[in-house]
Image (cartoon, rainbow, N blue to C red; front, side):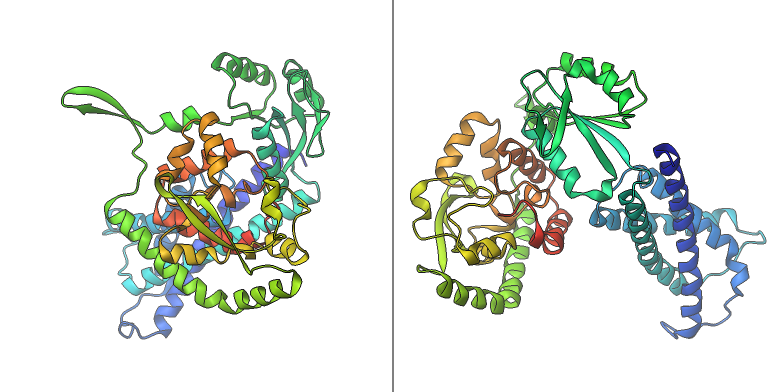
Length: 467
């Protein structure tokens, strides 16, 4: 089956599945209302057949809202998808009630529905639609793993950005991509992360036709507008989707607003610092979250401390000066995972670092060495979520060559963060980490913090970039 037909069938089946799950939720809610005498015994409830109009209207409303949420166009992570389902089902249910009151009045479909039924239906629809989409995604992924409907992807670029994109695709099989290769200039390595470099950008039309490419990602954030237009023009000779990775200025300019200073016009590039009740809310979550986490993980932390003493000579904790809020240094606490003399080399941590102890390689792989940072959070030096804390010598280096790097330090450093849960840990591009950190700071919300924490708990323990 070709990619286009597979994509069409999966989208149509998802529409049908969403509608079916919404109707099923209504039927179960109707039964529950008859069985459960809350908030009062059901009296004068019409037969289920009388609610057919309302059931169909609710299903259509939910599917329509999901369509406008682009939930049939974009592949989302499980957390993003649940958030979108919650919103779509909530809005769709409200629209169904509103439309039924307007269009069904004085018709054969007019019915007096119990409010408890609508509440049950709303809650059940969120759960059933989420389950249905999870099952649908699992089946689709399994089919793509077996070679059905996979999209052929070509990446333009071989630098750090292209590596990040390629790494993300390799770690996310549910995206359904097969990377056929990369394209760049003459001074290119023969391959990147095991994927071959196929030629130069001028070869794009031939490569798209030869490999039957479905999508092209242009991972050249430093390319000029003229170069981007030329590349897009080369890609448009084939029927392919084109995506362009943004540069730092595009991220920055997305938040520009017009302000004034005593009548003088000014351009304000986003005010990124948390203030007022947002700052207090984030701190309250940090205190509560770190206290709960320290209690939950205390047995594991005591076990790790005992094993470190048995494994190698030296202290249990490794305390190192890092740069945090407003560029001020603070002592960051971690479990020691390397030899005592590891810092004398001044080396950046790399994969298979020879300085690690036997136990250290395990606790770093599982991110257990990060747990003592919860003490930093409780004391106020760090936050549960925020930019990664770096050593002062690296901060001095990075701020000289990376635009807006120091704006990361307008918020507290985090135990985890948006860059970390997207695979930018260890020996990865600092420029790309900075982009993710700035995006997080400029788009902060409590829900975003919760999503990052949940993704860390679910997937962070086995992150391939943790070493």
